Length: 209
Image 1 (cartoon, rainbow, N blue to C red):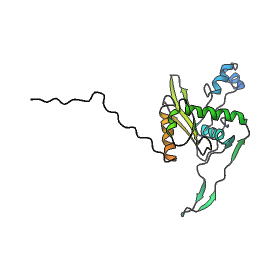
Image 2: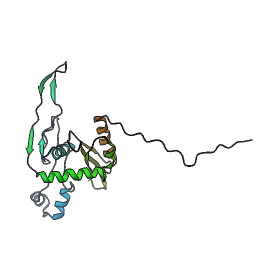
Image 3: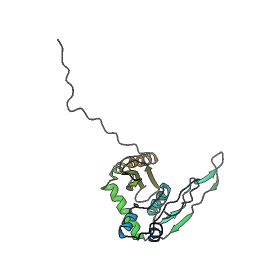
Image 4: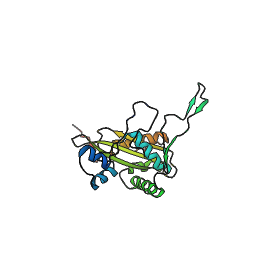
């Protein structure tokens, strides 16, 4: 999925993620790799690092069936009259690197996260979606970044969204709300209006003689 190197997006200052290995742990810490390290790594915890653009690229690959593309800001160069001068062609970075069955399991799990899990708020959208919340610890205190990533429509994906809010707590709160607004804007799908609740104990006017 390219987590150990920059994506090559056409922006300056891109950082790379980091994928820890048993060899790295022995060399840098003088400690062996335990099964617990594998568990932590598999859910993005421990020493694993990624950037939002890396995660968005990875989720796009999961959504499209297993092709990892180099992310780009534009689709084409236009002249002053909006005529296409040059198309920006997609660049494949990797493909066929994960089994179709594994991708199917991950996509189904992300879909169930919307139907029954922590991403259920996206059920109010007019398109189907698949999503995953994330809570990444950082620093020495118990502080967390809020992560959220999703794609839509589930059956035929055309958009992937990744949100990180630094120090934002759990991903199912602020980060999910931001992603929902992005999807609603993209699909021109206004949020449903919830009628205001009537007060349970309305004030009764008192007549003063």
